[in-house]
Length: 91
Image (cartoon, rainbow, N blue to C red; front, side, top):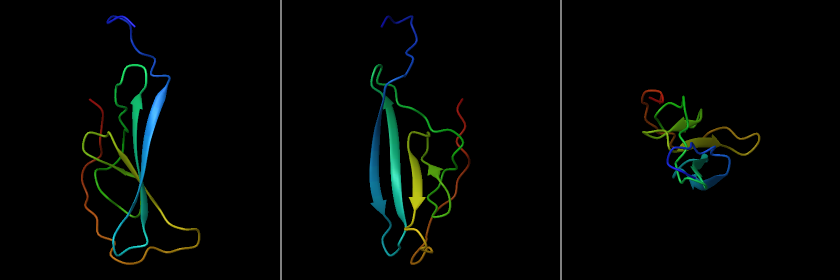
C-alpha cells in the first residue's frame, strides 16, 4: 500500500480480555481493535469515560471499550464502585 492510498481497514484483529471486579459479581469484557493491514488502532466513539456496572464505557482516547455483564437473572451485588467522565468524541 502506498503512502498516498488510504487503508480500507477491512481486516481487524480484536483483543478481548475478561475481567471480574473484586468483591462483586460484575464481569467485564475489555475490547480493543487494530487493523491487520496498516496496524492502526480503532477508536470506539461515543462511550463515556468511566467504569460502570450499568452501561458500556470507554477509556481515555477511546481505544478500549468496557462491556459489563452478569449471568442471566442475576442482579448486581457487592462493591459496585466506579468513576465518571465525559463522552469520548473523535476529533
